[in-house]
Amino acid sequence: MLISRSDGEETILPHLLDLVYGALPSITLILFGFVVAGTIAAMDTGDQLLAIITIVGFLVGLARIAICLHYRRWRRSALRIGDKWRRWELAYMAGGWAFSACLGTLAARTLVFQNHMADVVVMTLTMAYFTGIVVRVVRPRIAVTQLLLVLLPVIAVSLTLGGPSYLALAFIEIMFTLGATQLIIHNSQTMVARLEAERSLRLLARHDHLTKLPNRAYFEEKMAMAICEAGARGEGFALILLDLDGFKPVNDTFGHIIGDQLLCASAERIRASLPSEAFAARIGGDEFAVIMPVGMRSSEALLRGKAILAAVAQPFALGHEDIRIGASAGLATFVSGELGAKQLYTMADQALYQAKRQGRANICVYAESSFVAQRAA
Image 1 (cartoon, rainbow, N blue to C red):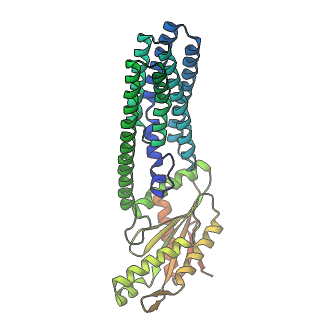
Image 2: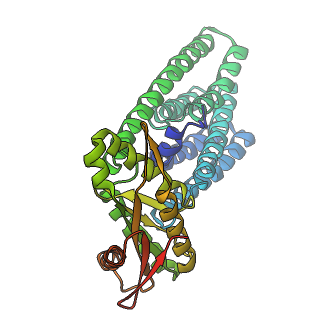
Image 3: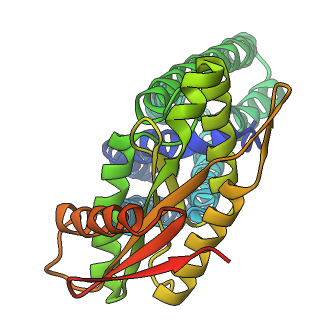
């Protein structure tokens, strides 16, 4: 299949594309071989059509090289748009299919003249091309279609020419197609399984096992990314730190099972109170952090913070009890390119400390070494 709609494959698609676009040296070598083989075939047979096919294939190959180079530059860029991954996959597919069609046409046209030297050169090139497809292309639909575009014209011409040698060639190509297809599918399944396993391990390493929110390590990574993005765009973003008020007495009174359920429910309410672009993490026992989207105004971030406090203040129906807790929050805004992640975190933490000192259940905003408390509506 070319495109799978599963979340897992959506996540590993960039790694799959890195593999296929990483074949630039192989693409360059096979293009060189195509030009040499096509030139020899055209000169030995004196066929103008072979010369035209060689030129067209050469231009297609150059376009594929240009796309690979452009992909590498785009891949190194700081900001990447997620929906473009599919476009890159389609670009590789189109280039691969077009070049395969040129090679298949070249091989089939060469066989028509029954020039043994040209036949050997061109068929050697096709075998090298097959090997590269089987080994490097981990997307079955792309790889199998490339094989068919090369082999079907050769098989058709071989059967048309007849004779023991050409019939044997057609039989060998058919058997090779069947075997190579099975190997391509196996390689793809193995690679996808490995990448998904690696993704699962990364997910476990970067997420809290209880609430399923990102953990502190992932939070720190995201903070660094947000600061880089804000600096590049010349915009700011808000950081909110939250502590649950009254969590410890609940945990001590009702036990750790209820305490864990309360943490999970609180995490879900925090997540539900935020826009999809925001990033929420659990950074400690009952401590959470929220990175608002770059470009969001401070006033809107403050409203979002109040919405979180209001959501957490609602009763939790856990077991046979209606449990009430609250939350305090500190908000700090990144507005300067000279401000680092540690400084921003310290500012938000100081604001949180002030919120707790001023009666809890409120959000305190850090502003030029002063604090403004705001209670949830």
